[in-house]
Amino acid sequence: MQKTGKQNGLTDVQGLQVGHYSDFDALSGVTVVLCPQGAVAGVDVRGAAPGTRETDLLNPVNLVDKVQAVVLSGGSVYGLAAADGVVRWLSEKGWGFPLENGHVAPIVPSAVLYDLGRGRDFIPPITSEWGRHACQSANTDKPANGCFGAGVGALSGAIKGGQGSASVVLESGLTVAALAAVNSLGSVVNPATGRLWECDLELDDEFGAQARRSVKQPLPSPGAPAQNTTIGVIACDAILNKAQACKIAQMAHDGLGRAIRPAHTMFDGDTLFCLATGVQPLPVMQGFLDAAQAQAINEIGQAAANCLSRAIIHAILAAHSLGQMPAFRDLEERC
Image 1 (tube, rainbow, N blue to C red):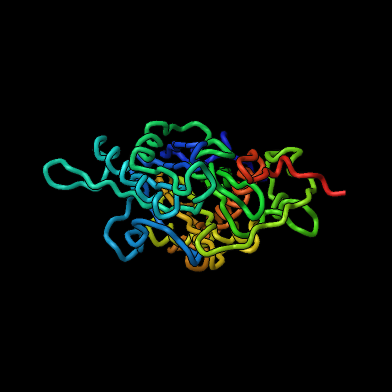
Image 2: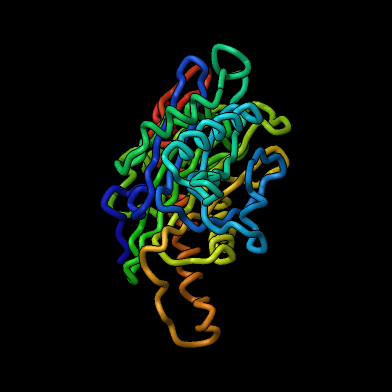
């Protein structure tokens, strides 16, 4: 029987830290995942309206294989500025791709979601300082679920979105985890039942009584180009190469598509990163294509998809109502 990691969050993967910066007047924020020792990274972009930085570098045919951080931000295109602060902060620590004369080039892939027009000003005042503040708060504690970081101004369908995280320990001893900022066009609630689509994936009663509710959904506002997007980070403590990390990021999108319906739309920029911290070797499994460790990648990818679904649910259950965005917890019960 599978079980969650100690904290049921992304920081259960050894070698990772998570930090946030949240502005509740602007209704926007930044989440940073730090990899002080570096982590092999992959990415898979499925939405038709992405906002990203440094994703081409993660293509397996390209040179650099390790990153020092991943940034998830609100603010749409303006939110990419937060990554500049993360790069500067990492540079001051000496963490990055080595250059001449002791200098480094921190590698910081990033993705943003659309939360414009939800706070005090239409455009949140995101600067590089938001990224720096997120780095300064980073630690190995359980990442906060709900209205934090990139999830502060998030909206999922017609209800409040947010940030969520979850983990699982596989029979092999590997830990797999996910963190998501949920700002989707699609809904996490099954309209036929009023219940969350993937609540049956629950481990160790992690969702509690809230997930057993059947609720009335408010009517969604019409979708508009680039005004949505779910972004996230998948992580494991296995030794992977970039191609394997990209495959796991690809498989993890299945969890997004199950927990949010529809997903990967023309109005979403759904993007997932995969980080591998290289603490443990992949299990050796005999059989067809065992040299490529294919079965181990299958198991990690399936676990990543389930973790992502669970992280999305945690984001929705932990969120509270903000502005004109009602939270799941505040919705009326169905008769």
